[in-house]
Structures are given as structure tokens and as C-alpha cells.
Image (tube, rainbow, N blue to C red; front, top):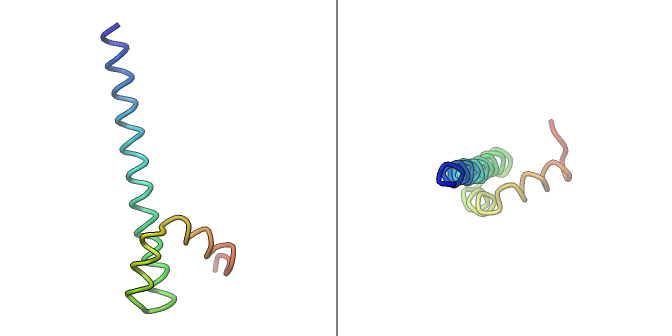
Amino acid sequence: MSNENNNWNNHNNIAKGSVKAGISFGSALAMVVSYANWHAIGWAILHGILGWIYIIYYIIRYGVH
């Protein structure tokens, strides 16, 4: 039973780390895309907070170049 709990905890920790990495990557990507297009730090910060939401919006609105 203890080994089963350890496996569950390991998988849970890996999943949490993956989600955090994905969110961090989404924020960084959103800031880079925003700054490259608008050349404004304020917009880049706001879009970094929105993360993947801004990336999806940008792709729908402007497409992939």
C-alpha cells in the first residue's frame, strides 16, 4: 500500500510541475509575441498575465505568420 501511495504522489508532483511549466511558457510566449507586435511593455505585461488566452486570441485574430 505504501509503494502505491508513493507512486501516486510522484505522478501528482510530475503533473503539477508540468502544469506550472506550461503556464510559465505560455506567459513568456505571450509577452514576447505582444512586445514584438506592439513594442509596449505595458501591453506585454498584461498579455503575460493572460498567457495562453492571449496566444489563442492572437492566433484566431491574426493567424500564424
